[in-house]
Image (cartoon, each protein chain N blue to C red):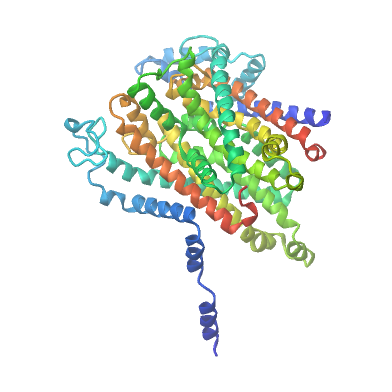
Length: 295
Length: 305
């Protein structure tokens, strides 16, 4: 038996990671729902502009405020005659980008800070954690709003605002993970045998904090998406005419007494998205880290 | 304990100080607001004069120093729009915000605690599943959207509640429920798990075995013992409620600090923004301070650390 045959044999015995993932996922119907919603969102955010029934920016004023199911507009049209379904489909991309980009940015910054604080301890830990404490003692949504109002609106700036307000949670969680790891025997053994600090960090610490970071990120994405919608609703964040669910609600609120569909459907899109991400995040936490089950 | 309180109090002061510093520099970095208040074709001298009058031409550190000295004395300058005292405007709006936040808190508790207790008691029944399911959905609903839907149903369609403004009980109902939604969802889940924790304890099992009636078991022993973690969470969530109040106030044109702050951000009326941030930072820090002390009082391990 040569080496490749051995590897093939092992492969047959051990189900692949992807298979394992779906096997575990299929046992939880909430996880399945969450995962399906996420797949749908990703699909819409990539292919959305090719499957929309109408041009989301096309505004034939004569067709303004059509109720749902009229003239081929499944969810109706807005005050400018733009098709709401098309705008919701295209708007999915904004939410997906904001959720993922913020989680990435906040996650990376928070991880770096958390690792530095937890691994090196000492005064730098004290200073960094004091900053985290201070920031955590201010309402998240208000912080996002003030930062965004000051640095300016737009997709990039809302991501920056959310990440600046959101990195602290990652820093705190990563720090406590690193602190717990440092006490583990394999780390103390590595230190005792003279492995360099850098190597310990890269080879032993980082791979072991990856799972909690992914879990936290998946649980935070829903918060970011709702926060973006709130900030855009308040007139900051993503600006019209670019279709985003939050600013669709902002524009629609003036027609609340006459045209309910303007505010109803983008809101449902936000809820389904946040629900899907949260369900998937809960499932991920319960599967990867059973200790945390049920908080 | 006293040591702990003093330490935490110093932290409160640092929080407020840093919050002001950060917001001050953020605002100044985004440029001075004079251009917004003068016509675009205003002569150069007039712009300079206006900047000098407002102190925007001086070096940043000098502006910061003056600002801090004034801020400590409660002077945040005047509104750039109306010329009224900034802190005064904010304080004037405080009662309305408190009214909204506390009413929402009480409503959340009145709804969530019984639901959470029942859910835990009827664990894994249909009732429990629906309760938990609704609270999961509730956490995914943006509160401003919920507010809009309430306005649509109760103000636009049924026309028996006002959609905006303040002053009477009927004005309060929709904003209070809007703001309470998220807290209700959180409190239900939390009460449930706190109750389950206690219900699984040995002493409950023992009293059950000894024949204590279930109702007294739940009410007398389990609920009383799970109230401690619930109170702590509630105290911590007051801050979240205040944050949520900003958005809710805008939806319902509620005359509170949140709406004032929102308008001031739109108008770039920075003295009011700074005064508002100052007040909110203080309130938030004090709430956390009280929650921490409460927690330390209940759990002595915290004090030693």
